[in-house]
Amino acid sequence: MEALGRVSGKWSIGILLVTTQGPARFTELERQVKGISRRMLTLTLRNLERDGLLTRTVYPTVPPKVEYLATPMACELYDSLLSLTGWAERHLHEIDRARAVYDQAAAAG
Image: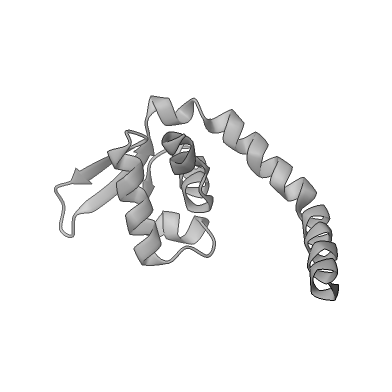
């Protein structure tokens, strides 16, 4: 279950969706994964690399060029992640309505 927690996080999903399409640099990920802070991006990249879901390649240039790419194991997840994000987008308004109804009922008594 710990592995599921790693790949199902909001930031992990965004990063994996980008890196399964090809190598991505830090600044590219920062632009494409909306709302992520530099610190959270750094931490998430390290965790995904540690878990074997990303490879990090450093090119010997000045300044160093670093790219991240999803591993074959992470690429296996692509269709599932796409389905999950599609489901979340399709049901976003229903979830928001359900939360509002619940919160209103909880506040009333």
